Image (cartoon, rainbow, N blue to C red; front, side):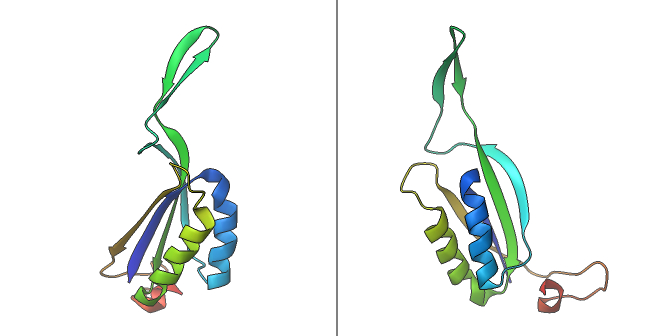
Length: 113
């Protein structure tokens, strides 16, 4: 099993959700986060005062999937969320040793479905 985490622009989330649904991905954890990478920060002026914005709003989407699904999921994320602009986001893939369903005690792939 693999955990796929992606940090994307908020406006890309709804399209990503729909496209992942067509792949059969049902279980997602979604969080509103803030961060920066190559975007660095911006300087703005509000009522004559200068200020610097160092963090940008993003959406973090996490899912645990079977290893065989990872490449298709990464492709969908990339095709859906890429704008060719700095700040499109990142995808992280990591190994998951085991998963358990709390309600039934099922484990492994059976706990994912």
